[in-house]
Length: 181
Image 1 (tube, rainbow, N blue to C red):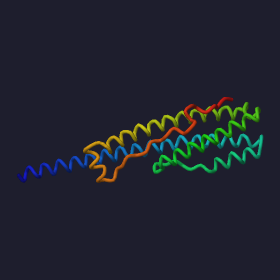
Image 2: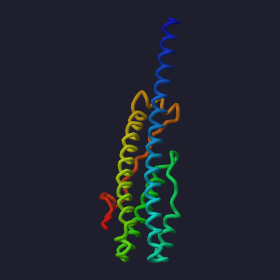
Image 3: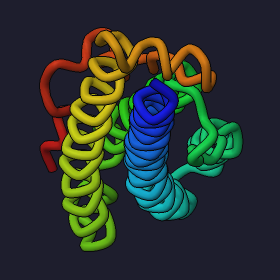
Image 4: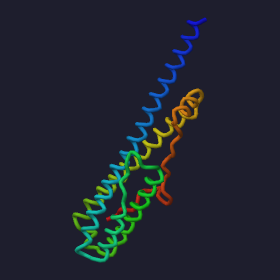
């Protein structure tokens, strides 16, 4: 009887430890995926800063307007929330749209090598962010399934693991931005 009780206790402890390790692993993967999004977004912000500086020679007012938008950016980190990431994505989209509008008014700017190369970079970063968002959402799906599935859900609630939010596709952004040059 005592041996049976000890075996059951050992099995329960082993199960809890195993589940805790799995939750930590998935939580780290989610945080890493979010961090990767931040890296890609930072690259896009850097490209937009380069584009804004290219406008300075054409229009000081447009340059200041674009730099004001860029200065409001925030870093996306492992501890950022999905709302913060979505907010930064919306700011990036707005800044890019403003820049494209400015470039339309200055054909020389639109034809410059800096503009063309940087817009190609922005498009590449845009694709990287999309892929990073997909990786994050896939990882969150794995985490959420485990948190919500019995008997893992018992361990999750005991250890404070909860479901994570998904990154939503920003409104009006189902296609790549028009980066024609």
